[in-house]
Amino acid sequence: MERKFDYFVVYAEMRTGSNFLESNINAFDGFECYGEAFNPHFIGYPNKTEIAGISQAVRDAHPASLIAAIKEKTTGLGGFRFFNDHDPRVLDMTLDDPRCAKIVLTRNPLESYVSRKIAQATGQWKLTNVKRRKASSIRFDAFEFADHVANLQRF
Image 1 (cartoon, helix red, strand yellow):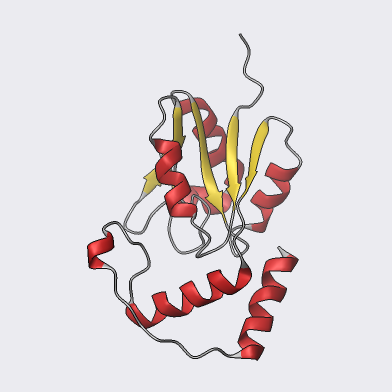
Image 2: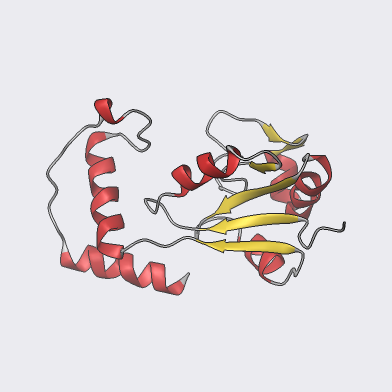
């Protein structure tokens, strides 16, 4: 039976639950999510040097080569998370590709704003054990929040 899709992308933003969604996707046989494959600061995850044999330098020069490697070298269906500050060439490639399954992950903008402020204050960007959760009070900045919402809406 022919598959309808060759790969997938999760369009998301920071503090929307994309790490949690990725963990759940990876729990299913036949799916592999490679993290933030097109993050400008790293490939996939911090301290990783390649995905499916493609280095960050090659990815930066030829982003389609990483998409091709994910399609070809993943057992099952492979994909990645994509945020608004990732390589814009990839956004065009994936949106225009009918063989790419698209997942749009959103969260209440106020909740994501507060979560991001708390993560900035505590340095805790990923919670893997609720017993180790760090708490912090934050200051709400209306102008900063308006910018946050505007950025979400643009993406």
